[in-house]
Amino acid sequence: MYFVINEANTGYSPIKGFKNSVTGVEGVILDEPVDVTDELWLKELKTNTANFVRGFSHIDSKNIIENLEIIFAVTGFRP
Image 1 (tube, helix red, strand yellow):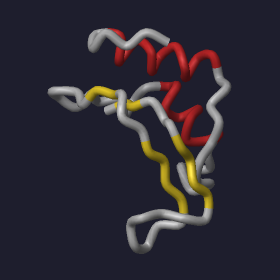
Image 2 (image 1 turned 180 degrees about the vertical axis):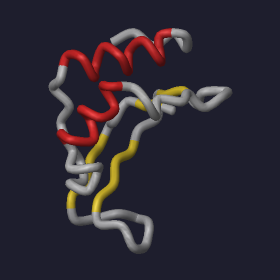
Image 3 (image 1 turned 120 degrees about the vertical axis):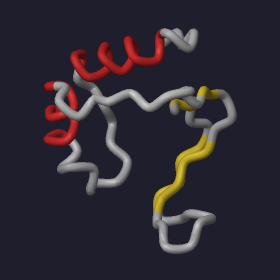
């Protein structure tokens, strides 16, 4: 899924056990999962985010962004 973030909270989450949260209303849930397990850009993303343990991370890699845009283009997503 993807959604447009309207608000980001660091140090607070309405869900018990989480320290951070984001909220948004505009988005799409894909009908089927997209397998990106072996994609090179996923390896780059995991490296850039320390395997997703850094919490919120700004993605500035053109390669990662372009590949995510391709995945969601079929839903009508326009950056």
